[in-house]
Amino acid sequence: MDDFLFEIVENAKVSADAYRMTLKGKKKLPEILGGQFLQFQIPNRPDMSLRRPLGICQYDDYSI
Image: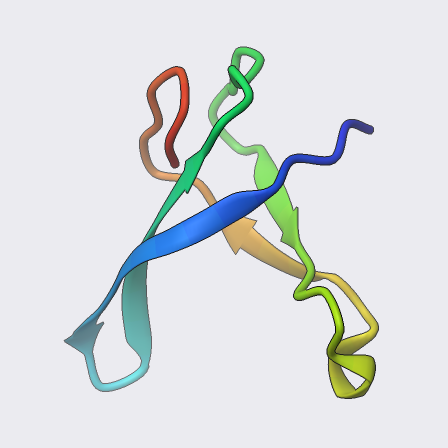
């Protein structure tokens, strides 16, 4: 598993319980296939030590 560092550039509420988050990184991403998830972790947050799975709906070379 590779680790990538992203900046959150958008976090838009799309319904009562769902958000669309756009992340931008500096490293080129590998190919992402349907059904794959991103394991999301926030550094320096001991209260959120477990990674959270996020579904990916689209991506390009440097952003999800």
